[in-house]
Length: 299
Image (tube, rainbow, N blue to C red; front, side):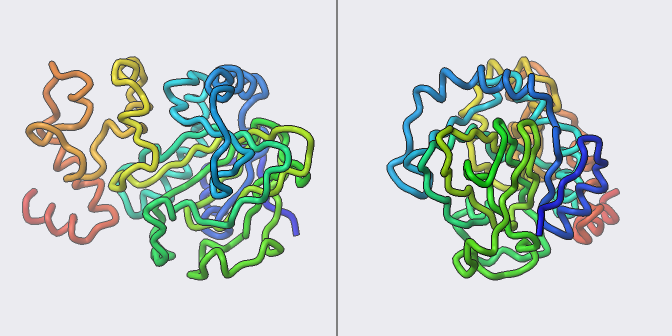
């Protein structure tokens, strides 16, 4: 059995279909080699200072760098990739008004690194064992910053594992398939899909860019407000600022001052939109009967 590969011009609807049915898909050549090279060059000074972990959960021969929005301007076009973001909004929007960036991380898996333990990414929320299978909280991506091969430890996936309540340790590594793909391609998968990095049996480092998104009402795994200096955030486009979390996570989630949107913390001279609560409630009412009942009473 081989994993599902889709062309770079695939539609949001097709990606969404595979996320729902299979729990993952691979988009081939989603970004150019030039973009990959630029990100690698921008993150190199930070990666060169990073040490391997002191445990095999994170990988003793694996180095990791976060804060990509601050450290790599070229990563912004990956973070905001229209097909990935569009499919993510469509899936997570079934249970949430907004989405946000959950984490950004350049992962360099060194030669001899053992296979990673199998896991679901939504376990970042305190390793809670029993998330319901019909509520999606997260969409994750692994971007190939080098060619991914079986030999160099390509991420391994268990297709359709997002539909069951079995725990990862109840599976065997033999149940996994290697997400072999070319540099610039991306593995997109749900937070429920069981996966893990493979063993790097090659003589070279394999790089991956991990960009994850989650619903707007959860705490982010990587604290974007502390990872990216506020002076820098002020220079970002509004769409990227919102993705970092400078927006309401729902009608009553994340406001500042007098029930204003978080972006007023960036621009204190501005006043928030007085209609924002009802605007958000109309969005929430698309999936919430309770929100719809509030609108019916207060409109």
